[in-house]
Length: 393
Image (tube, rainbow, N blue to C red; front, side, top):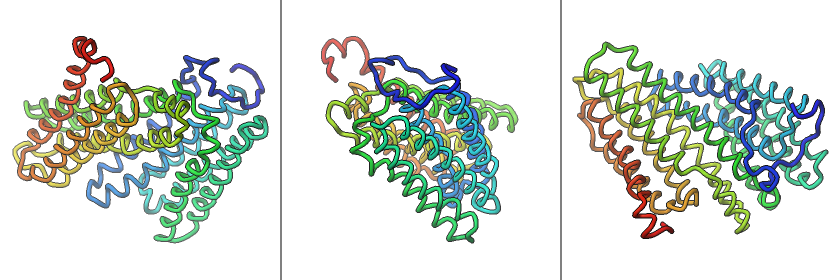
């Protein structure tokens, strides 16, 4: 703790904090979301039908957005004082309450889930009001955020006392307002762009959380089966999928979109980079569930359609999202690597469509090959001879 009591201050200056990293408080805060993501995955495992997919996404979005809200605030205004720590503690309580209510989160637990989310947003609103009071240059942005988030939080709060299906209508309206509020403040964001090294690291840490859940899914799937050669190979292929997704994402992670926004005055680049991470982390979490479902399938029978679509579709979502991230300037190889990702996603969709009747081991092997090829392409492109011939690729 730097000071006992310290008002919020701007933390976006790259010159003064060029190597800014996540704090111990932020890492501790992330632990609640490790549990929340695990709960989401386990809940999804119980129903992987289309309605289960919808329920998984509906519950995932507010969990992710809660993390985004606190992360963006800390990126701009973090002050490691007593008040800030206590407010983060309240954020953790709200997130933990959301995690508790994920099971039956669209049924009997939905009022508790809505109230928990609303209370977390109220804490964030208090933080933005506090920042606006102490930082006049940030007041237009903090005021816009506080108003927009307050309207959304109110809708979530009253939804707990309104019957289904209108409860979920209010959820949808609340999320739309939450997501659109930053988009309505673009003229203010340009003067307060996020820190270019801290924010990518934070997003990388959340991506690591969902990748960890994918690893857990492999372990749980194997532990529930009798050991045989097909199970072992299926587990290996599942780990290859997770490892390859880690490789192509983190090898290309950086703050270039933020730097481009500063030099070109295009805030939309940062916003697109932000929102594209939502399908990415949804896809990775769902892919973990898909691998577990394959490990639990009978090895000698054709993989059921819903399980084939789950593994192929989720990994295709991951590759598409990573392709978009690359397309908008994450690294110098971005444009051509974006094409690789989108081609890989297309191949996986074709496998989902035409792979009926394939055995589980063959499906997961083909998915693993498609993702591993992405790594091989990156390695080939990054070899020293390529850099010497065309350093601007």
